[in-house]
Image (cartoon, rainbow, N blue to C red; front, side, top):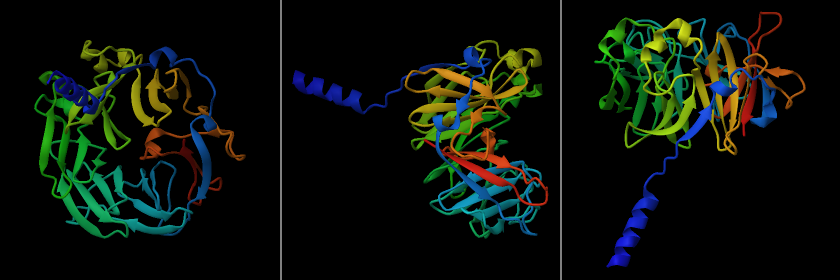
Length: 352
């Protein structure tokens, strides 16, 4: 009997999820600029000129999804303009239309792609809807965004998860929401814990969601931890970040411009089996930081000089922003046409 009990206990421990919280010193390495070679994080670079047509004239302020079959582009200078290209850069079609009609979105600068169901989800925060289209631009449906202003949505098989960028405006607001992907009906929500008087403040940072190994990770902008979401929206601490503020310290400092500029503002996270890449702001500059999972050593460089492109002969520096690419598999650099009358060229680095 005792042996059976010990065996049962061992099996229970073995199948429970293990959560080891790793500390990462971002602030301690933030100002130590070092060269980061592109080959340290990527295995190849592909050059893709985007076709120019009368129907598709792009700027360089783009948000891009580089998928298995297609490339999807949102032009930030033309809110409501979404385009689909082949993997070789051939223009295929425009998707959706901005407006106030039943099959339109009012204004959007963000989107997500479901490659399995071949759907593009436009995040219409002004209209409080997710507007879903097929790849060829056919309207599918709208589902509501509940009491939230969001730029991000994680699409899963039966549900969606999104974060509320304005959760700190009121203690009545929700911080995280989980809903049915078919009709948007709420399944679960996490209420904000900030004081009521924070609704008059302006927070110069946003919540982050990203996926890694089929799991969803979340960073609250008022906390110094990255959590993995399991059992619905239950948060398990995965990484503790030294960003100039310890968890549960005076949150008023986040709304103080002078103190805020001396703290790290995490704007993007990429995670692989070997490393984490952080895109962040610090003292009015933008940086990339590479953190190895082997020894947890970090090195950083400023945004414009960060990656030395040793994978292709055409560029000395591989300049990219985290919000250019909306996937975890690639980094994307945008090369503007020198004449100014053609669509830009993409340099797509596939992460290791």
